[in-house]
Image (cartoon, rainbow, N blue to C red):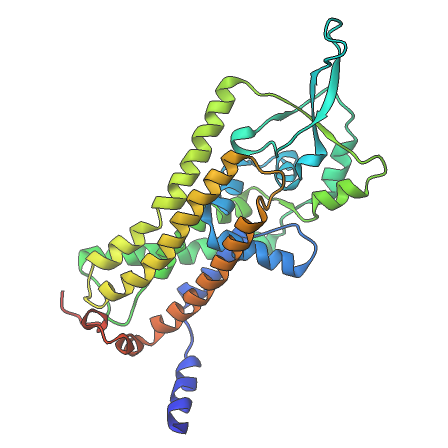
Length: 329
């Protein structure tokens, strides 16, 4: 028994392949949050890992403008819109009304130009430029993901190694848009805009105004595209792992399908929740808890998968003939 424990510990000491470690910063990047507490930051990372739609919506749909970046994190209580005054309808007077949802995604609105610009001072305090180290670390993640994707796709040519299994990189390749944004856009939200706006002396509000019909259609398309990519794209990994040699990859595709099933279901749920309207970035509390819990479970699965990648004999414990990796096609 003691010798068995020593054997397991010695196996755990074996270094995890570099392309696996190189992908880990991508998970942290797509889950970057301006929240102040570490627990809140970690929870958001887990949520974005458990629901690709959340992180990809921020990367694809928000853009690079620092005002829009901060608007994404603000609750609906900090937004107002001008509506017709019912009591003075004939005089054409307008009054300010608080929004009941965040003006992002399919409900995106533009900031009214003719208003007090003091909100921009708060936004400047919330944003900063990405450092050289942050940008370089993003490029390193891109390198390892791209190399892993190329290695995985090359399996279709029949050039493979029984001791190599680079499908983790392909599994996490959906994070590339967020990593590219970190590397090349440069603007980061480093302070929670909700805290900064709440601390302002006059409880600063941002006045929004409706956008054109064509802009709404464009937002509808991009948000729907993000949802489609979040639900469908990860399954490419399962397809390649199942239909490419060696034979042992058939078994491993079953584990990959767990990731993809959770991501597809959660992304669909997040897409529906977005349409229902959300008053803060977390959305409905039970959905936020569910996504974060799924991210925690998937993080454990990813760690186990990384260990199995470097110890191929461990797959034999499943007692499945398809789990025994062979070089026969």
